[in-house]
Image (cartoon, rainbow, N blue to C red):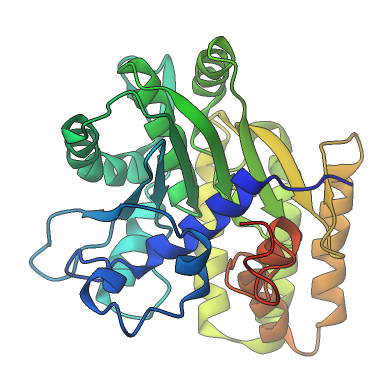
Length: 337
């Protein structure tokens, strides 16, 4: 069993707080301090001098959909990127469209290709983040970089760019991150971190399918297995949302054979019993079995099977990531602060 570090506890809380950047680009606890004074995540990160929010320019239809926060402490910074919006509105739809722009794109200086949609989202934040760091009196403060979901690849891109720009990183951790780029990017990024004595920590939860996307070319047949299970659920439920998921997933698989996506970082896998284990020879087969069991156990209630997968991706209190990374949070959230 692997225990998460206090730095990972901090990353978990910071990744949650990144969701408190609203559609106008405001960090809500700064705007409504009394309303958020009892927020457990904010209490855990206490001791900071400032929390600054970053977001993209507002579009003509939707609010700002990309966001990050910079938590400034006297001796270090925490940079946390927000994941995909989950509320059912135009902004969330636009966010999902960007996420599904999964074809890899070559980026100069990365020695490889990255996720087009998420990288473009990161670029809408990068300039302002670097300007904010440059304005700090102590520019030598080390930085912790983290993010959940879509914020995971953004974390990797930011870590790469920060090191290249001469910043010192203290810790890098992603939660539920999709794959940020191809194998060439993964190698160059890993080599860069290693040269600085760093490793990215990568948390993935039981039944969370997002960290397995975009798929690896060598496992397309196994990903097709997921598609078959989804097809069975669609036949049983005749649910339009499941049908849309099947169509999107099928389109991605069709193109993925010419891609070369690879995960980055040291895997910390959270089992169904909320125990953290490392990579192993049989872990992939165990994950496939868990997905299959979920579908089979809810064959007559397919919506529940889908809900379980979506729930596995969440980081709020009571979900798998919290129970694995920070099990005492919510009951004794300040125990190791």
